[in-house]
Amino acid sequence: FFFQAEDGIRDYKVTGVQTCALPILVMLVFNTFIPFFSLGEDVKMMEVCGLAMLLICGMFLAIWTSSMSIADEIEGKTAMTMLSKPVNRRQFILGKFLGIQTAVLLMALPIVLAFAGLTIYKVFYDARESTRDDVSIENAVIEVLRLMPAVVLVLLEIMVMSAISVALSTRVPMVVNLVACLAIWVVGHLTEVLVVSNIGKLELVGFMARLVAMVLPAVGMFNVEAKLMTDGSVPPDYVGWAALYAGAYMMAAILFAFWMFEDRDLA
Image 1 (cartoon, rainbow, N blue to C red):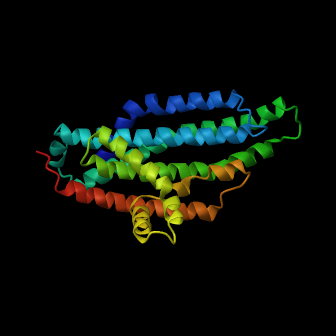
Image 2: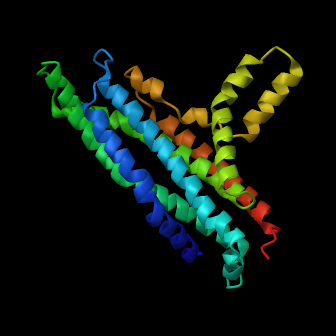
Image 3: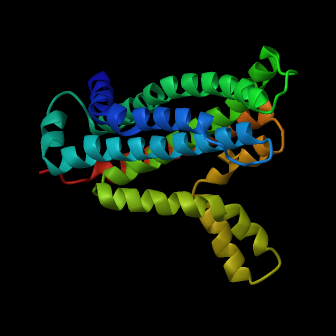
C-alpha cells in the first residue's frame, strides 16, 4: 500500500517539478511586476491569475500522474506483476490516489509560500508606485490571510478532479482522460446555471439538468475569485462545507474506481 503511494510520488518527482512548479513560480514573479492597468486593483488581479495558474497546473499534474502511474502500468502489464504480490486491487488504487494527492501537495507547498511572499511584496510595490505611504505590514498580512481560503478551495478542487482522473485511468489512456476531465470540469462549473435557468420550464430539460448536477462535481463552488475582486472574504464555515463536499465526492470517486478496476483484465 505504501509502496504504491511512494510510486505515485516518484512519478511526480520525475515530471512534476519541471512541468508544473517552476513555470508557476516564474509566472508569479512575472505577474508581480507586470502592470495590469486595473485602476488600482493590480494586487487582486495578481491573486486571481495566481489561483488560476495553480488550478490549471495542479489539475494537469494530477491527471498526467494518474495516467502514468495507473493507465500506463495497466497497458505495460507492470500492474499485473505488482498485483501478484500481497497487494490487492483496492490497495493498488488507494495507494496511487494518496501518492498523487501527496504529489500535488508537494508541488503546491513552495508555490503557496512564494505566492504569499510575492503578495506581501506586491502590496508594498503598488503602494510605492502609487506614491502611497499609508500601507503597513499589517495590511499586507491581512491581504495574504484573505487569500488563503481561496488557495485551500483551489487545492480541494484539484483533489476532486484527481479522484475522477484516477477512476478514469483504470479504463482509458491519458489523452481520453485529459479530454474527459476537461469536459467534466467545464460542465461542473455550469451545473448551477443549468439547474437555475430551467426552473419552471420544460420538465425533461430540468430533470436532465438536475441529474447532471447530481452526478458531476459542483466545482463552481470552489471558485471564489469574485469575492477576492470585491474585497470580500471567504467565511471559514464555507470552506468547511466545501471540504466536506470534496471529501464525500472523492470517496465516491474512489469507490467508483474500485468497481471499474475490480474486473479489469490485466493479462
